[in-house]
Image (cartoon, rainbow, N blue to C red; front, side, top):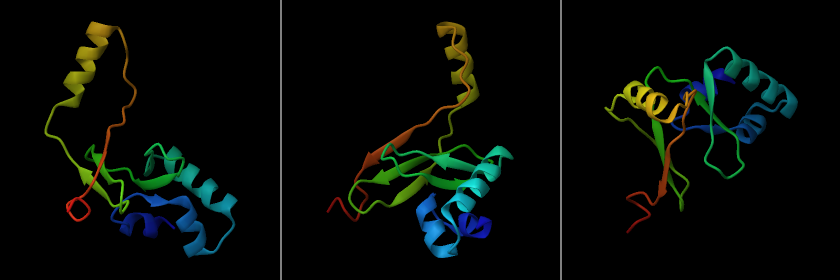
Length: 112
């Protein structure tokens, strides 16, 4: 299962892992929970109720999600997020533990 997540070009749905591996859904979710707990896999949430998983990248990134074909692309920013989080903590008295930022729209193929 880990190799399937590792070789996936975008976050992979838990249900796809269940179908491709052919084991009990509980086993898949238990393993995904373990991988998440030890910090090698993270959940990608696109707000549609479908759980997707990807390797926890050393480089922080976000996603571009096509609403038509459902293609997901990783996008990286050069900005210093630690500085932004420090500014939020100082100005808003709010400690950021994590953040999610996803962009939804149409990819080049679907926008034609």
